[in-house]
Amino acid sequence: MKQFGKILKFELLGYLKNKIFVGITIFLVIAIAIAMFIPNIVDLFKPDEGEGGSSVIVDGGDSGLPVMLIYAEDSGLAALVKQYFAEAFTGYSVSVAEGTLDEVKDRIKNGDVKCAFAMDSASSYTYYVNNLSMYDTDKAIADTVLQNVYIATAMIQNGMTPEQAGKVISVQINGETVTLGKDQMQNFFYTYFMVFALYMVILLYGQMVATNVATEKSSRAMELLITSAKPTSMMFGKVLASCIAGLAQLVIVFGTALTLYDVNKDAWGDNILIESMFNIPVELFAYLLVFFVLGFLIYAFLYGAIASTVSKLEDINTAIMPVTFLFVFAFFVVVFSMSSGNVDNTVMKVCSYIPFTSPMAMFTRICMSTVAWYEIAISIAVLIGSTVGVGFLAAKIYRVGVLLYGKRPKIGSILKAVRKA
Image (cartoon, rainbow, N blue to C red; front, side):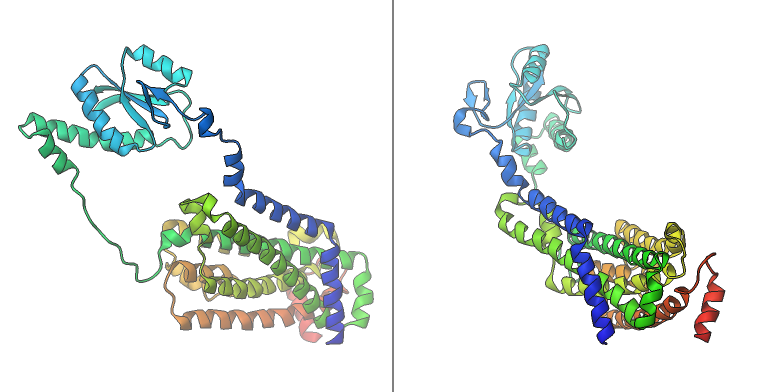
């Protein structure tokens, strides 16, 4: 135990003194801080309304909103479309255009008008805008509104009064959704964010364990260490140190994001995407912690064991590739299942009990579906047992692999040496 404590302390100090590790952590914290303060930063560059920078004067009216014009040769059609558009486009000052279509285009180019709809008929139009934004939804909204305009026009032509047609079109349908389990749409973003964090941290630190082991072996330092410390203490010390470092980095990054979001919550307003990402139940953080630690340990043990059989540092990527592919496979299974909206498919259920895929698969099902407590317990129990078993097996492989140099041995010969050891 004393040997284990010394190795753990030594490896932890190595991470704390590692400039890359510290630099990445500081960079992520600063990046998150900037991202959380974006609404406040944007407000600094907005002109004050009192200076006249945001008001637009159209047809003698000062609305303070960007202007949308409706152009049509049929004045009745223009007035009807204007009435419906004014209700749908609440972020615009909607007016009927005066003058010719060329004059309307000139006003758009000059910046006096944001956009315009030139109506050929109730079902045909041309949308004019100076610079089309990536997020411009005006045309999609207009298509929906004009369907109602077309229906109202047809009703009026067939004998209904405009008031009667308006009542039929504007009827409100009241519906309510009661979610008895999980709301997948609401949970999707923070689930994906946490799964991606698990993927990056486990993959990054697992490969760091492999690199450290291979570096020690290639420099012959491992031969000296193995004579003064037990292989189990060395393997568990290295892996647990990297696990603590990775967990600390994860807590710092997540903690910074949550704290700064809480500070800037009012500035973000009703941003559904940001709100859903940070509206994370406390119990999911507990599950995140459990599956991160166990998932990290089982992969780090594998990476460390494989790295101990490599003689040259440049061969490490080739050696650990099968393990990396296994982890990447688990990630893609989870992502595809989330995208399909069915996280309880057969593949996901099977992966929930396989120790190499369960850290992400079961965690995702817990976040986005209703999973029985005994299923979660079985998955965690299998993962704990597998992690301990893989850990002791990795320590034995580490002990044998330390003395293997030259051509990398085959799996069969390594297992045979482990049985004899």
